[in-house]
Length: 249
Image (cartoon, rainbow, N blue to C red; front, side, top):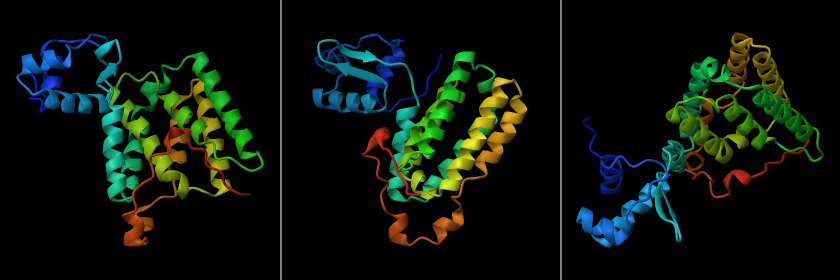
């Protein structure tokens, strides 16, 4: 079967040899000899493959092929875009919203009773944070809830974009939605979505998701009114997903 030309000798090697997740790659000197590349070039390409989550390198266990995931590539792309201009968040948020709406029925029909219990637990945990003093924005609960709805979807590209969205949201989106009333309204919709799915009314859950998406405050006009220095300010992504945002009452 013909394959697309890959601009990477390492990735091309994996494809041509039909290596599967968990399979080990030859050593760097062996790859250098087989591919006719310098050791430094092999290391460079391996670093890229590792950054894309396609290869894992561990001491004493060597290099192994990883299960394909689109999340690292999508995250790298959106991180770069936000570094150029925070205005790109709006476009990426629209893409994410349309993906969730398009794949909703396929995804939630696969949820198990244990998944529903997990979703209810996330709603309860978020409510506690919003009533905590000082109030905490339940970012991790928000992220986990949406990703749980789509956890069984057998589409690595959709999964990757959805995961990358939450990195972008944490870097930029949290600062946009600071009103306490907004967070309470969001979690009202989340609870409705969970309970509609629990009783099998996926259409009502889809409508609740659509209305929830329409709550997003970020619009193109917000970008137009910002100063050029604001728009060019790089997104802060170094803090990672452990970031915990707080707002005052």
